[in-house]
Length: 228
Image 1 (cartoon, rainbow, N blue to C red):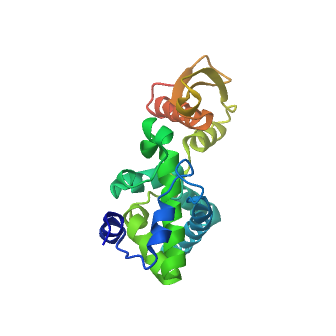
Image 2 (image 1 turned 90 degrees about the horizontal axis):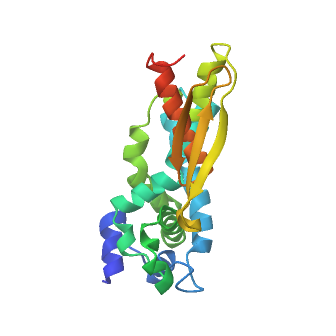
Image 3 (image 1 turned 180 degrees about the vertical axis):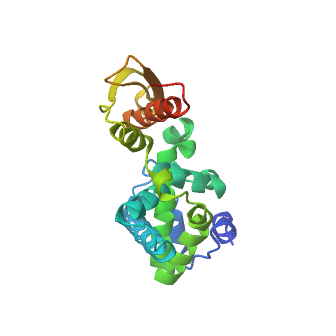
């Protein structure tokens, strides 16, 4: 049994019949034209369906919005990258030399894409029932630890609802700076309230994530009794 096959059996609890599917699922486009991108497409769709079905079964008290937010909290780049690190996937991704030298195996986008590709490969190799088992094996703990529905709302939504509930205007978000190279860009965003001079700052690898961080900080200040 190859190193990759042993790893898959140990960490995914699945043994591939077709080893080429496993190899393809772990191969980034920088390493070969026969790479994981098509498998990623399939795995992404199947992952969303499987998680949605599980939440529908497990959370009868959730309305449509709650279900959507819960699924989004589980099927996103950062969560899937965490799953990838849990199973030590970074040690097994096949990268081209340039991508490897720039730390591609640690990049959240590549880790998340590879998880989806593996799910697609397992679906083709073993079928629906087995692929479902693997998805739940990877995500069941996170599904069981989901917070209450209100806490699933992102920080911008919670800040907006907090302000609107008190008859206050919507916050404004402005990008203050962007630093770093294209693939390591860091955004700094300022969140301002329309009816006061209070503001908060947030940083992130995208404008959206920086806005979320700034909103979370503003909400923390407002709800701690130190804001107005």
